Length: 226
Image (cartoon, rainbow, N blue to C red; front, side, top):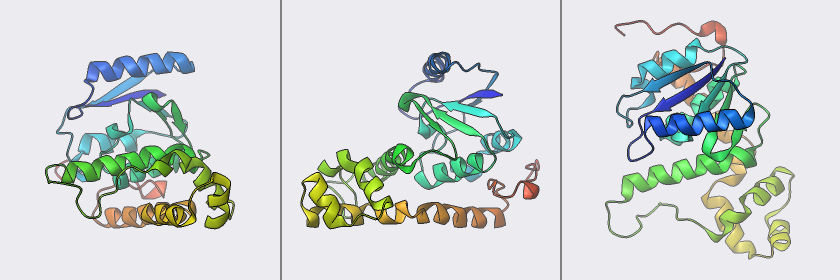
């Protein structure tokens, strides 16, 4: 089954626009849309309050495909988006992000999905601070090294040193080191970012939010009235 998943997003494309993008993408990829799920609730609701979405995720099975127009349909929060993606991949459910022309599967490389998640994080931080004057402390601005992100990630994954990467890219070692540290790229490459997401999922399970799909046998339908 292939599902078009849409959500009313604040200040973004309408449901009709999302549907049109998804239909066009599905046609391009040779996919047949079987059904759709639409969320009309407040787009800023945290995952734990999105009952309809969580029930939908738990109704899926291996081999199902989800198509969204953009990653914000899953969540505006990077950590929540990682949880949802991890949940789907652990159950062999693939995700297509139409505007990025990306299919996310268990085999998807970090260099392919990471820039989208990092932009989500950047947008999240901006939304929390854009009413303040100037650039608040701790807020990450865009960097001239962002264009090298894929090469940097691949190099770190292959065990290259910062010095070697800097030489290959023709950039300052100290500046590259600062860039890698500020964006925690080494942590991301060794997948500790996913481990943190899984740890958070365990905490979620303890609160009976029922989103983690790590162990299918532990999944239970969300009970009405809870």
